Image (cartoon, rainbow, N blue to C red; front, top):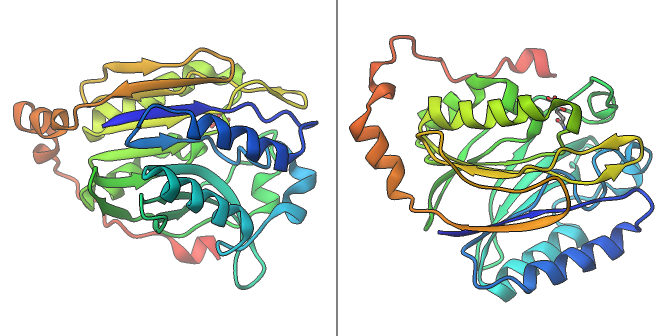
Length: 269
Ligand SMILES: NC(=O)CCC(=O)C(=O)O
């Protein structure tokens, strides 16, 4: 699986429409990837909180239409990072999406753990209340978003549904780079998945993003890692490593505590 991580910079003074055009050119210039992955809220800029309400769109809106067009024109799987979704009741969500080579939405995931530390996300957005997987011709894929990396039970929930690949779009700030590197590797090793994490880069206002997008295999090997600037990283991933690891070292079979795999919906209302 040829995987391209497009580690986008989203400076607050760049009009978002220009950024979408710029990133579209980057994506269409890639050399025949199977999967392209973008960061969390890259079009809007995660830290552009003032623009959240104005820029949120339904999943049938023009931004998602454009992204679907990229996937179908190029015949790729596009994990298009996340977008600000306005749902049918008017609430806003941070919604990650995977689009298939036919331009159809394969998987959507509303970020469950919205972030409130030096961030207005938890005030402005409503959390999701579920996480599912999609069967694709790449394998069984789950998605989580950024801060979710700190909540391992979410990943077990995906593994319980058969996830072999977990894609993580992020806007993770530079002061906690060590946490990013620790959690991405930990989740790959403990859940025996290929973990594909695409972070934002550059500055968004006062915040410096960490970059260091990475692809990590179930042994914890970092197959590719970006630096801290805007960059595209391409890596060929042999997905057989998931089954090989689970057969060689069947730690998931030794679990004694089964999660109930349910969400505390009453807490999320
Ligand atoms: N965008 C985010 O969810 C940031 C999370 C973060 O900075 C952290 O967990 O640390």
